[in-house]
Amino acid sequence: MSADNPLNQIRQEQPGMLSNEWDRINKDDPEHALAIINDPKLDFPVLYMLRDQLDTRSEALESRPRIALSQIRNILHGADLGIDQMASFANQHHQVVEAMHWMLSTGWKNIVSMDYTQVIDQTAINFLHTYHENWLKEMVDLVFYRYKNKSQRHYLISAMWETANPLCLVYLANYLLSNQSVESNYARRMLHFIPEVKHANDNASAFLAFETWYEENAHYLVYTGETNDAVPGGRPYRIHYSAKYLGKYVSPRKGEPLQALMSNEKENYYGFVRLPMRQQINLSTYSCRLRKEQPKIWRPWIVLNLNEQLQSISMPVHGRYEG
Image 1 (cartoon, rainbow, N blue to C red):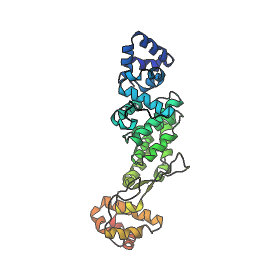
Image 2 (spheres, rainbow, N blue to C red):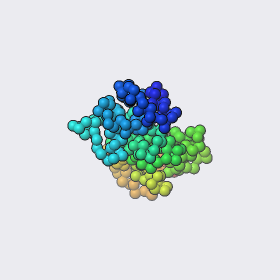
Image 3 (cartoon, one colour):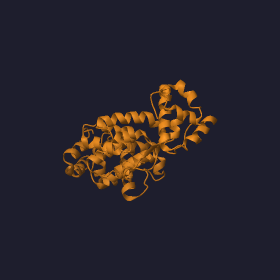
Image 4 (cartoon, rainbow, N blue to C red):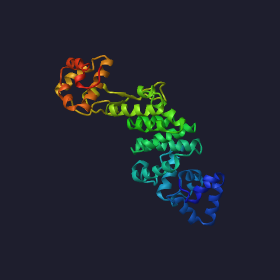
C-alpha cells in the first residue's frame, strides 16, 4: 500500500480526519484535490470513504475512480450504472477490468465496514466469474485474510470453489507451511477431504502428502459442487478413476474425458466402471504409477484384457505397487 498519496497516509494514521481533510484541500485548491483522487497511487479505501463527496463531481474524474464509484453504487444500490449513458457497464470491458483490479489490489486487505466488505466481495466475484480474470490465488489469500480477522467469507469460498479450477487446491496447500497456526490449521481444514492430508502427523507432512496426491491426481479431478463451507464433510473434488486408469485428462467442471477413447480402451472402460470401488482405486493407481515409471511396459499392458490386468496388479514385475 503506497503512502505517496497524502490521502492514503491520512486514512492510515487518522481515518476519522479523512473527510474533513478532503473538504479542506478541495476548498483551497479544487484542481489539486481532483489530481489527488485521479492519482493511480490512491488506495481504493480512500475513494470508498469519500464516495459521497465525490459523487457530485464524478464527471471530472478519470475512468478508474469513476468506474469504481459506479461499481460501489451498483453493488450497494442494485443499479447498473455505466461510466456513460450510452454504453452498458459490461461493454466497457478493458476499463472496467482495470478499475476492478485497482479496487481489489489496493483494497482487499482492509475491513472498513460491512458495506465495504460487500463491495470487495462482489467485485472479486465479478472479476473471477463475469470477467474471467486470473485472480484465483488472490481470492484464496482474501479468504484466509477474512478468516484470520473473523470476517465474512462465505460468498468468497463459494466463488473460489465454483471456478472448478483444481489449482485453488495448490494455493490452499501453500498455507499448510504458514508459520501462523491459524492459517496452517485452516488450510488443513479446507483440504480435509484428501485422506492423505487429513491423516498426516503434522502440517509439514500434510504438505508433502498433498504434493504427492496432487501430482498423481491433478489431471483427473472433477468438481462436485460440494463445499466444506456449505456441506459438513463436503468433498469439493473427486477423482475420476476411469480417466486416471486410462491416462485421459478430464474437464474438472463437466467431469468428462477431454481425449477420445480408442476401441480397445472403450471395452476396458466399460468393464472398469463395473468394478467395485476398491478395485477401481487399486487398478487406477497401479496404471497411473506404471504409466509414469515404466511407460514402455504400460503401453502394451493397458490394452490387455481387464481380467489379465487385475491379475497383474499383484505381480511385482510391472512395478512396485501391489493391489
